[in-house]
Image 1: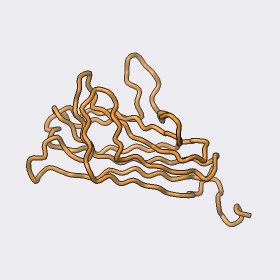
Image 2 (image 1 turned 90 degrees about the vertical axis):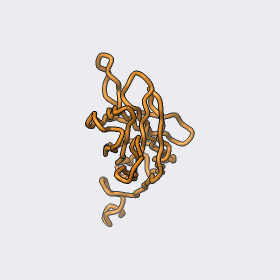
Image 3 (image 1 turned 90 degrees about the horizontal axis):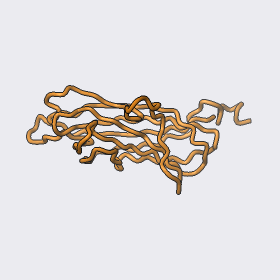
Image 4 (image 1 turned 135 degrees about the horizontal axis):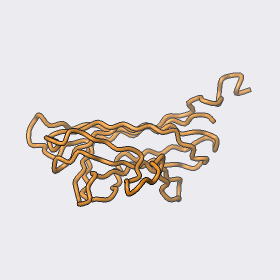
Length: 171
């Protein structure tokens, strides 16, 4: 049997898909904006499979903000976005998949690394796309940058690479 051969047994990695984004994106808003360059799609081989989602991003901010909020969404082919692993409602706090805070001063010159992992159960064999949305934490419009700082005026500034990796795990 397949199990005797170690194939498709629970916990086995069945496939790996990855997106590497080397360019830059910027969004000026006070709501969550889609970082489309990181979209990553996988087609599970079984509805019992789990998808391990791993994101590694580099974020820059304008206005020395450097407080950011992110939501990861899953979208099945033809379906709507479903948020993954967002916190419970408490008071008027923002619900998100994860947050990232850095030093307040000099933020316009820096990029900060942020990572997130999740084991998702999409229960489908349809093509499934994972999408990152983010925003600078503020009540007014602020700019958040992917893979670059706000100020790119000299050679001490960074241009970085972000990635998303999806692994199908046999369920």
